[in-house]
Length: 309
Image 1: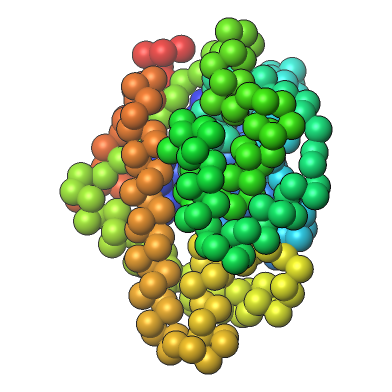
Image 2: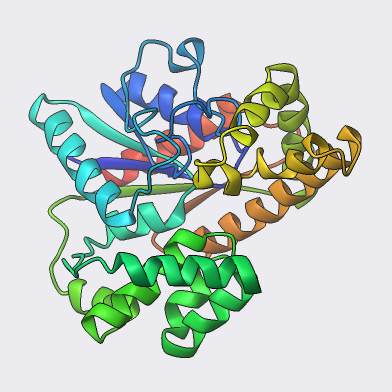
């Protein structure tokens, strides 16, 4: 099967379990499409698949970058393409799995990223602006010149907002313009696009709350404290699962209050993920209802895949 399967959806939806089962069925290997799982020392916060959960299936693009380093969508797309080509060349099926919509959509749409020069002084200027005026003010600055890209980004994605402003300054055109122009080149791959959804929404909220409780039992507090004690890692400071515990480490809030904030922020993030994938009609929705689990989800996924093969 010379195609790429994509398993997308919100956090705590069971994407990893489904991707592993599909990889086992179709002789595949998993490519992670998660902007936090690329980093080392953030295993619990980013919910990386454990060796037991991977079940012997090779997983790519995980755990290879220090949290002190930045990483762009363009870099992920380039690396994902190389991984997919290698997997296909060995007669296997790439299974892209993750919830970072910008990564997945950019790869599926075969976006061609420009080689605009970096302006490190301007980056520093924008980062200082965000520190002094807030991330929302920085996003508003982007909205003034590139409202389309601003609408796709959350204010917490400071590095991406800065990059979008930097591209506009160095090239004179917006990332949104570049995307439209680059879509003229068709993708060399064929995709089967799956996304997990929930009805009612409260079912997903329950899964998220349980996930957070499990993460705490698995050492989230200790992992977040290590990130807190290394201020040269701004990416870690932005990650959901770390930054919500920082007020506890500073003695400003009790742990229980920070945990409730973490659950709330995770639910809000899941809502944004659902919105991202729902608006793309190319994705086949697999809706999970109360009482349904992996067997039902796998059966629905197989039906879609066999239909689109």
